[in-house]
Every structure is written in structure tokens, then in C-alpha cells.
Image (cartoon, rainbow, N blue to C red; front, top):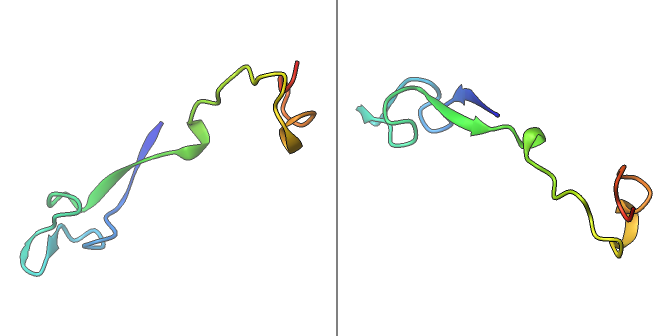
Length: 61
């Protein structure tokens, strides 16, 4: 999933040094991927080491 954020280069103005912003192409916002919706590589292998085993629902099963 993605969402819009104010451009970190022009701070939402759409221009940078009197020219269209190169960070957002003059829009004033940028599209950002939400890291919490990134897919997880299920199922995990049975030999998954360390803290993943026993914490994640399918780890090592």
C-alpha cells in the first residue's frame, strides 16, 4: 500500500530554487510505500534460526 507525503526537498511548495522541484516533479508531494504492508516470505524454512522461531506463527512449522 502507498500513501502521499509532503515532498522532503521542496517541503510541499512544488518549486526548489525557483524551478520545478526535482524531488516531486512540481507536485509538492511524493508517493511512499508503507513498509508495514510488505509481503512476508511465508512459509519460513524449518531451520529458521534465532528469535523468529516460536514468535512468528508459521516459523519452523
